Each structure stands twice: as C-alpha cells, then as structure tokens.
Amino acid sequence: MPETAVSVVIPLYNKEKSIERCLNSIISQTFADFEIIIVNDGSSDKSVEIVAGFSDPRLTLIHQENKGPGAARNRGVAAARSPFIAFIDADDEWDADHLAIAVARLTAQQDAAAHICGYYIGPAKESREDLNRSRGIVPGAAPILAHRDPVGLKFLVDFMHSSCIVCRRDVVLSYGGYYDAFKCLYGEDSYLWLQILFAETVLFDPVPHVWFHTEFSDLGAKNMGRHPTRPALTDPAPLRRAVPAAQQRNLACLLALYRLIETEKLVRSGDGTLGRIRELRAQFPWPDAPPARIRYREARVSAKAAVAPLRHALSHWLR
Image (cartoon, rainbow, N blue to C red; front, side, top):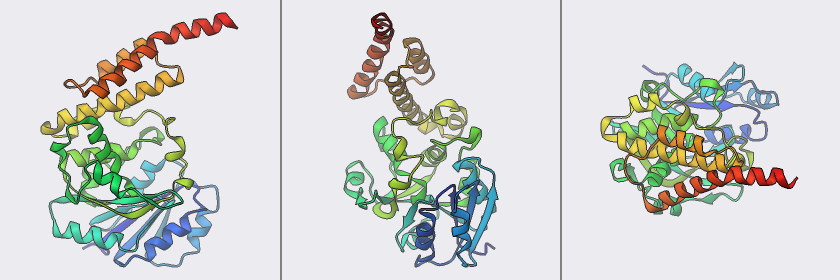
C-alpha cells in the first residue's frame, strides 16, 4: 500500500527567489496526506539551501546533474510512492484547497486519468477563468471529440499546465512520462499531456486554484515567440503510435498547427526558405481543409518566404 495519497513533484533549477513561497503553499494544503519530492536539477544558486531550511518530514530532496525539466519530473515520478502525482513548478503556488478538490474528484470518478484546474497569472494575480470558459473549458470531462477546430485543440492542450494537474501515477508511467531527450526545454510537458488528453478521460475545472508567477519564469513567458522547436515536431512518431485511431485526425490537425506556428517563426527570423516551408508542410499536412483564417496564415507564410531572397539580395546590393 502507498504510504501517502499524493506525491508532489517539483523540478528545481535556480529558483532561490520563489521556492520558499512554493513550498509554503504546499505545506499549507488542507489535504495533508502527501509527500514532497524535490529534484534539484543542478542548481547553482541558493535554492538547495532554502529547501534545507524546511524541516517537514514529508519532504525529500533528490540531486542530479542538469538534465532539464522533463528529466527532473520523471526522476520525481520514479521516486514517488503514491497513486496520485501532483506537479508544481518551483516558481508557482497553489491555493490551499488545490489538492483536496483534485483528489476528491479523481476519487469520485475512477475512470478519470487526471484533473486540471484554472489559474491566475502574473504579479497582479489576474484570473483567466472568463477567457478559459469562453474558449470551451467547462467543468467535467473534456469533450475532446467536439474540439475539431485546430486552434481549439491547441487551447485544450495549452490549458494543461503541469502545475495545475493531478494525475494517476500509473497513467503518467504508461505514456513514458515527460519528454526528456536532448535536455528538452520546451514542449516536453505538452508532449505527455496531449497523449493523455487524446486517449484518456480528463477532468477540467476552469476555476483558478494555481498562481503562475510569470515574473520568475525563465523558460515560458519570457521566451514567447523565441522557443525552440517542439519535440512534437522533431519526434512525432511516438505520438502517432500512442493516440487512438479515433483521434488521429485531431492529432494531425494539432501537429499541422504546431508546424504552421514553427514556419511563422522561421519567416520572422529570416530562416524560412520556401523549400524548407514546403518540406515541413509535407511532413505535417492538414488532414482536410483547415478554417479560412488558417489558410490565410499559410498564405502569408508562403508570401513572406517567397520574397525573402529578394529582400536579402536587395539588402546586400544597398550596402
């Protein structure tokens, strides 16, 4: 029998400004049957010293060389002793009832693999509940088959922030955990959660119970528009094998949208040649005609890629 109901897993890398607040929000939970597993991913600041100042017997600190957030979370899952895993990043914090609500709902619905709640964001603690509801996030199981629009599909996946998720440990393990190859720093989380969303019953709650302190985020908000390529595009084969046949069309739509976003980034940076754009489109085509607004974005990418050599030649000539 597990010794605790929930294993809280925290990847820690140079978060001396926020880890104390994060831990205090966990220790203050109204649901107290948990262990805390912190995986120090090669921190070089005072993060570990701050953690060492906590005397809570439920806390375990594991050290590893820097391997990235996916590997750190997977190390924590491997050490967990509980049927439920709750993830939280070291710069976020939970409302006091976060675990109590999630565990109660997952216990009541045994076929549900995970519970995801809403969130506040930024130093002003801005709620995104109204926006999330307007985009289709409603209480209960996610109606994934109804979200056939590619942008809607992406929003559902994007809503699945790790700090907001409590998931059954055996489900996380069955999908191989987070993507951790090549020290992946972006998209390692959505790589896991989109598989679970497309194949399992997932409970959504638009009400915020988590606060994202984006002012301390080094990998997320501060890099908007400059992220590396998602592993969903560099290593899509495992996704295609894991997603059920009934969801393959939805997966193809999501990958095509990720590819469109990547090509938009390439043309903005000047690296998007027309040949490269065509190559990516061949790898990740739309399974059927996308909405008009998506076709317009595709056309803009083609136009910008086509004139890029002319711009480069003119710039060189004018020097």
